[in-house]
Image (cartoon, rainbow, N blue to C red; front, side, top):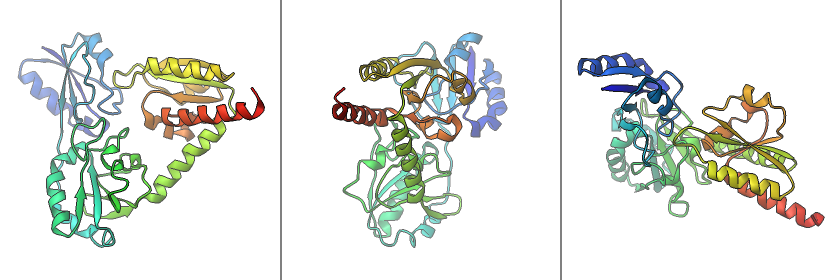
Length: 306
């Protein structure tokens, strides 16, 4: 069988090992080399181009649940750590009794052990299921409802994992912490969350003064929302502004800015792309802030009698 292997950036170093494995099993193997931004980003077009019958997508859990033109097999890649490293977090968490716990896919299998550890140390642990995530306690870059659903129940939110991309999705008012599983170092990240929140608010304020909007539609199978984009275009035009739908598999700041026609972008693709304001040089609103924009524009029009 012809198969296409797809890896996120952190796993591409393992690509040849897996390619050799599948070739020994008798498959003709191709490897997708373009950047992979998550479980939503499946290399459908690459697979079609080489006649592959299956995409083997590594490092993520099932995300795209609709029928696809090519069979997709998700291969999760677990990472391990010693639960005992969590002891180092107890000092930072000493003032908090009720904890919402979250992690990424590679550590999801550790959730039962993490829960047991904190309960044995006097904590009450809350583990939710996200609206898009596959496992309880799993946070995606676009879905942190595994923890944000407990706004009234918990004293703090705790993310166990590497980096800040995923925990910054946890837009919470409660104290938020990251525990790094390699050594147990614990960092409170509310300042970082607040900085991101302010950037989004600043983009919204600039957008209220914009007259021309580019509405971004991705062709990635897990990010494509043309129906929403068409609705957004009509809403902007109803309020006396101009809007155009822009379509791409991947949106590059240089290519977008060459249009020189838009004051603001409305993002219907990956919601976290809206956080890269510095790269795009113009305000970019996700659909949550787009709703806020419409309310503000309606209020301004009401005051001016438009």
